[in-house]
Image 1 (tube, rainbow, N blue to C red):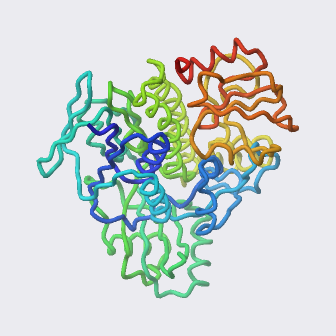
Image 2 (tube, rainbow, N blue to C red; image 1 turned 60 degrees about the vertical axis):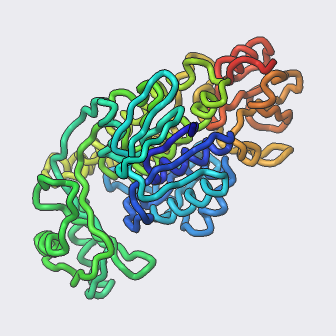
Length: 475
């Protein structure tokens, strides 16, 4: 029997596959596309995702093919200088086209031993107390202990489960695509600058391959949003908003997106879980979608591996929904707010001017930036130390930097006292004794995703938290 089947081979599914393979879980990824997509909806990694890549030893690969960017706020079209004192050792994002991100994550999953099957579409599923049965479009049947739906906003897994997907339908729609142009770059830049004075859902930017990424408001909301727009539709809308179509031709790909926001009521039903766009959809404002998905995977991977390996406490898998559902809900809320700021009516214009002035305050700018980049995510672990529930930023230790010690996806006790022990959990938790200057705490118990699960110096308290997050001690 397969341990885990992942439906969907996009960034979320591939990240999850890699996380599971760190723990020797037998993973099969089912991707209905026969070849990787060339569409690049996601344009990069925010600071928290950059941290994650560093935690798993992948950052050098991404930096080799990406450009760093620092845009504070990045909220509702309002750009501000990068805030000072952001709580991260990686105060930047990486401009990485989605196909490149997928290629790197695909390579990593294969290196670790994941099995990726292309041209395989899941069409049915059923589950019992022992596992999940999956039916593919070609009539093949597979059996696994767990199934994770990472199969996008129109998720077959979610629909088969009957999980409700409540939210708000699209009220506006935007066209998006990469294509060639005949107009000269200076003219394009001048036109874009003028149009964006009143319409922030408009843009034309050069890609590295010489094509242009074109964004333009659609004429209403299409009845069939799954259908791609035509080049003629782009030309018509460009002329309507800019008075010129820039001579667009030879499109590489064309797409449309709306401002619908929806979230699955449950991220887990028995042995089946949902992650990424299968669990939540929202407008791409702020560039959060791809990042939110791979951060779901980062939270889920070690927990699911623990369930497969048999050491996970009964309720550990339920913490995935408990922790990630509120995070997804907050992203839906902030994208709704951004859509309001992008409006063209007088009220939206006044609101945007006010919000822009507020973001000139460093504290507001930092708050918004931490929200968009997910650096500010804090899980509710109850009352306690100020670090509890936050992810620990990378710090320099005598043994090297902290994230360099987390490549294996294990828990970590960072002990400045030298008096504590993880005996009984050494197969799941590393013990690092380091009396460096940071962090300002006697000892921290870090989960494999880097979030602080406990702070203190009492061995009995530590044992209770080791049991809570990593199960019973090994016999």
